[in-house]
Amino acid sequence: MARWLSFFAEYNFTVEYKPGKQNVLADALSRRPDYELAHLAYLESPLYELIREAYADDDDLAGLVEALSAPNKAVELTARQRSRLHRYSVVEGLLYYQVDGGDEPRIVVPNDEDLRHRVLYEAHDTPLSGHLGREKTYTSVARNFWWPHMYKWVRKYVQTCETCQRVKPAPSASAPLMSLPVPADCWRSVSMNFIFELPADARGHTGILVFVCRLSKMVRLAAVQKSVTAPQAAQLFVDNVFRNHDLPEAFVSDRDPRFVSHFWRHLFRLLGTRLDMSTADHPQTDGQTERVNRVLEDILRSVCAAEPTKWSTLLPQVEFALNNAVHSSTGFTPFYVNGLRHPRTPLTLPPARISVGERPTPKTQGVLKASERPSNGTYSRLSRPVKLSDSASVTPWRPLKTLRRNTVIAKGVRTRLCLN
Image (cartoon, rainbow, N blue to C red):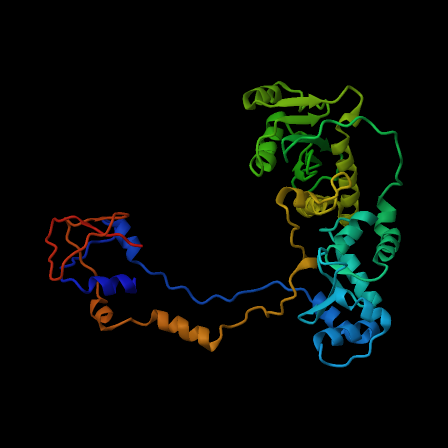
């Protein structure tokens, strides 16, 4: 606004006021909202600070941190430590480890049992982790952390998890079946199924409609009532799958009446897709969704053991846990297959130490005050109510016409102003 006032100060013309209700566009453009300075809040995790402090109590890692932080300082290291020194690096007080140059650096957790259990708790016990098995928990931890014999720690931790032992059934092996053709793209083929007989929540939901991408294994979950109809199921498909991804070419499902109804057949005919149903009394055709249903029920029993009727409120977190777990068939997480990156979790927050509600520095306050100060005397002389004649009008988004000095804009002349 100050820049434009300074520009128009070079010309002499008469400005007449026009009420805002008669010239809504110009009135809206002339207003400058004055916002109070907001305070920025950053999420942070105290885990990294605990790791930094624990290095001092670990004799082996303390020497490595000191040697890497001060290369010119003579530090006594063992022959084994010197042979592996090239695998370590120190960044902002955190010790990182990588096997070779192509390996992603991972934070080294010191030999502190409580600290390592805290890392495993975040990767296994929280609702965002979902009490998954040994392999998936190990992959989640190994993505960002490292310590010697970490796999044995994870295996022992998962085997002794009380919640997992109480709610998860024993695994059973079965003969392999012929698999369906693998789709070429994500969400080109989707399998879907229902889970019912869950405890009723506050809204009367007793079931879950499950959608699974047959390539990336990404899951979409929607809480439903037992009386859900085919049109309602179609609306859930639009809200959860079609809106976030695209239109699949094929669906795989069992012979649930909601899927074989005339409505679904008409919908598939209009959309140009097809529905591949399973053989009667053979649910193994849609074994992918059946397997997801089993894991989903195990997770819900784990995270909702105290309050079973609140399972629907934790459904988004459970969905996140499933999509952030490495799938055995792809070797990647569904998140990574869809977006080629791993999502941020409370366990992977950056180790920034920024306090919540930090006030701006004196230099920043000076810049803010200078931006609100008039640029020159011309601005002060023109800082008075603007007057426009009744016949004058403003047309936005047009090129600005160059005016000569001392040009008077008479009443009734249309002026075109372009605000960049």
